[in-house]
Length: 341
Ligand code: FA5
Image 1 (cartoon, helix red, strand yellow):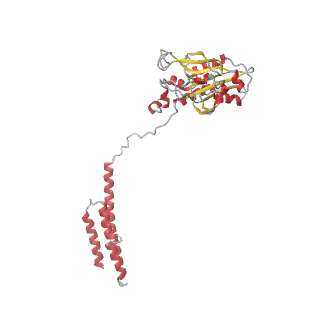
Image 2 (cartoon, helix red, strand yellow):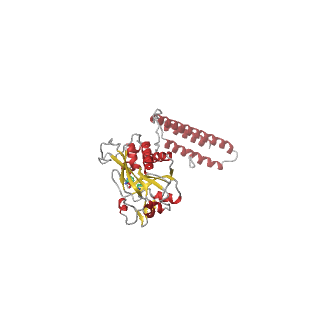
Image 3 (tube, helix red, strand yellow):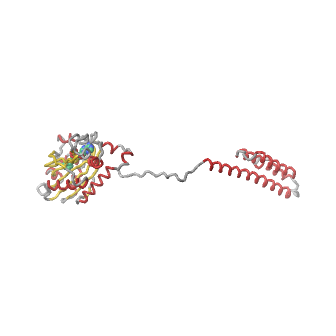
């Protein structure tokens, strides 16, 4: 038994040495299993110890453990050397250049239309207006009827409407917020209402979904002069002090008199381009004195109060502010475009 154990150790150490320094890990593992595995020769020999006389067992047992320890140590050394070699190889081939610049995570920013709407809101708040909101899905009554646009009124054709149901629409303008606010509150009122509106429209200056800011003021003696003053103050703050604007008489059923306001086209410096359609002016808002029928619809006495209202397009203002020549850029989500603002 003693000889057998010594022979197993010698053979194991010799065969491991024969494998050489470049032996792959799998071969070392196989060889190890051949001696130390459950069916390996050392394990088989040790199982035979039960048959030995009791007096020999302690000595043989000690020797068997020594042999096992020697074999284990030899394999551990070989496997350790292999691991060290592999680590050295991978360090030599993988180069980490610590001087490379880091990867900066992309940081989002506020959309130019939101920036423009926020700036506009800030200016109106500075002029004493407070902010109100209304839903995008609106009743036909608030969007049209209460604004003096009855069912068969030709003005409905001016706004290509998306209907959700017979009496429910995607609001075509922010003017229904006038109705909602006036029904809830009493004059004096100075309110703006920014929001999204929808129409069947699509070209370089028209989008099917766009933003408006409604504004209105109601008190005992509000005049058209107040309207001009507020809009001039707003536009000169939004653009610059020298900004020229013009009021053109126009028709909206919910105001009398009504006007459209244009500002000089900054894109072409008033020479005429495709955005201003060669006219040197861009229409940015509709406005006027609130119609007595609207006051009646919300339960106000038209003889006791007066007011102005306006509704302006945020995209048009943003186009002029940033020199953008096609409204569709705002909705295409092209990073190269958006990163400029
Ligand atoms: C209205 O929507 C009226 N509610 C405005 C108003 C309010 C008048 C209060 C009187 C009193 P209009 O349809 O003209 O009016 O639209 C107002 C502005 O929205 C336009 O001047 C323009 O700047 C913008 N606009 C209109 N249609 C589009 C569109 N399809 N895409 C982008 N902007 C648009």
